[in-house]
Image (cartoon, rainbow, N blue to C red; front, top):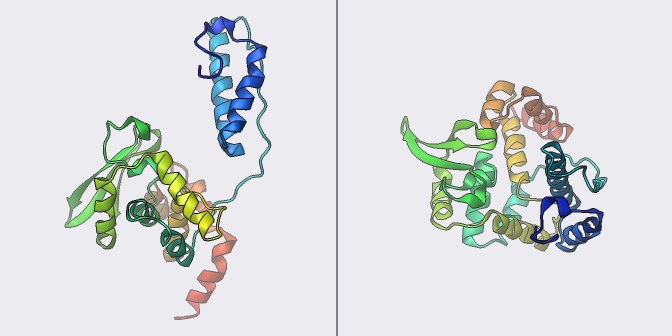
Length: 238
């Protein structure tokens, strides 16, 4: 609507295609982010055709070809380096995500905060332990422990609301500053799983900790060749 204007749906035409493409590219989005927007736009136009708001889809925007991105593993030393360049509040968000595997939107503790797309968590105490009750991706509810060692960072996080976009930008800025520009905030979740796979080879336990829907997703971490050397070294110490 921002690009084509407040017009009737049946007035959307092929002349709007270059305008939309120009807007997407001038915002500085990554190729993957542009592809997400493109998929949503095309899905909307196809739905308009299906319900007969449009006689036919007026144009097609092609996806940008991108190489498949492997899950990034941020080791503890790199994580410490990155967070050393972050302010106290944004660092708290990163610490909680790195040690719990929570997605960026799940760090929200206010279920009415629309900026987080309906994802949130609450905190309670169970069996004398802190427990995160997560209303997460796909509307799934899960409970995961919160280590007491990061409770201070957790308290800082919940007392200082940051918009999810701000969280990502602050983390990316710190990554660039220390010479690790390829990392993104979601890699903290991947790193949590990678670190956990060094502790346990129990796929079902790891699946539960990560709240994966499919065991095959969990197995990709257990079969990650990058972790093999670390596991071998640690096994030689006993």
